[in-house]
Length: 311
Image (cartoon, rainbow, N blue to C red):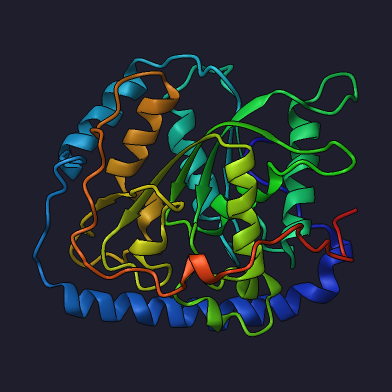
């Protein structure tokens, strides 16, 4: 009930194309991760604002599981592009184990979607179904955890529309989300969302405009040597990401959803406890900066509406 959104048979004709697209995309992503493993060696850089070790984070997670608390709001975990339902359900299970039995934690995956409009419609539909009462739409606040593209889906779902439907985000935690675009977005040859996630695209500019007009708390995380999104792209503009070194023989991006340091920090925040991270966030150790020149980008007055939506 809480961990998946069922496959809609009406999406079947397009699913095969998306599987092929996803296979190509993730093959290159895995290759990028493998190259990262070859190049990263065993050097581990300690972030002064995120100093907890993996072993200590696991110990803290066990303590939280032994002492569950009630979450203040429902928690919605949003998956990444072409994820068949692996990362988001895993994150939701970890979070759920630290909350009381009546804490509401759901995950939503987007494998059978094709546009950000379809992703948004799915999020709103699932929230209405799981949290709405007496057939009424759900209008309460939620905490969102976004894995990769899921962070952008959450931001897009929070933008008001003419029909008044949106999700009301109190706090969003994102893991390796391309808040400024993704380095490898050009690999999405057939997926419109990949084009939208290119740095400096009209879609990305419009998300930034919306966040300026209607701000809410975003806590971004990333692991170093992320060749897929790029750690310098993993936080909103004018904000510093909480970064961590990637453990040896792990993919920086593809395994970030399992990092106990990140998950433990998120759980601490959801429980209303002191997080592992310390403000202000330490700047990234790399001097590399995003390539798009934000000042040169024209403002986006509105987002184009997709002609295809989930029904």
